[in-house]
Amino acid sequence: MSVIAKQRPALERKKNIVQELIKLINKYNVVGLIKMENIGLKQVQNIKKKLKGLGIIKMAKNSTIRLSLINSGKPGLAKLAEYIKGPTALIFSEINGFKLMKFIKENKTKAYAKAGMKAESDIIIPAGNTGFQPGPMITELNELGLKTKVVSGTIWIAQDTTIVKAGEEISRKIAQLLVKLNIQPVSIGLELTAVYESGLILTKSDLDIDVEDIKNKIQQAYVSTYNLSLNIGYPTKENITQLILKAYMEAYNLTRNSKIILPETIEELLLTAHNEANTLYNTLKERNPNI
Image 1: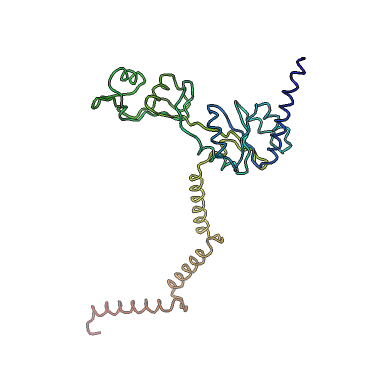
Image 2: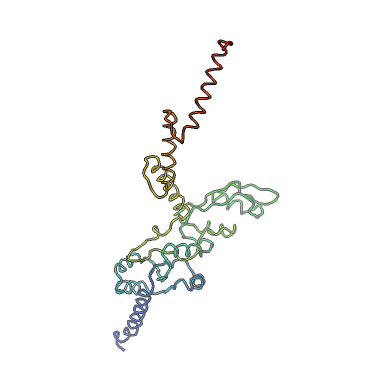
């Protein structure tokens, strides 16, 4: 059998997969790329089950995924292929990219670190009882920069210690120690790298937002804008009642201080005049009791 004849079935399979992916691309509004590094088949299957009704995940070779994106016919989708790096799968969904990112983050699980991995964040060994008896373990801990003490026959970590900083590589010794201390610093799960939605490409940094922080910033902006509109007297639907009340009080105070008689001010002006007259009478009375 010739080399070409052997290649034909493989090319046909690739063509069929590309066509299947293109159908899904045109069916769903949101198309995303997910990184498949450091994740087992079991985790993928669990996430697929949870994603049921919200979308689907399709795994294929990067070259096949790239072909499907380029040949889909959707405006701007070919640009998504630029974000394919390392083992990648496609995710198709009807929920928007922000909700999809939230779903994926919430479905990550903790795992032990392996030697050679990069720390996602600072790995801290907390102060407290290790449960280990004194012996070679003290030397092992001290060699890794951990201060120890023996309390009631067990080794204690004297203070919280950052053993690996974010981005640094985890050594074999540290990985083994973390297992012994039952510390799981690694998040296992899908990682959404980029999403195509409504003609736009949204990257991980675009999608990975702190919702509460955004809400607080919007609220602060609203309060600042509202106060500014009041201070400069710019009427809006939100402040018109307050502006009318403010204008009324300013006009009222002006007429009262200017002693302008109006139906709204006459009662207070008469009361003020009466009080001033009494004060004047009492002052004169003190000077001349015969008045």
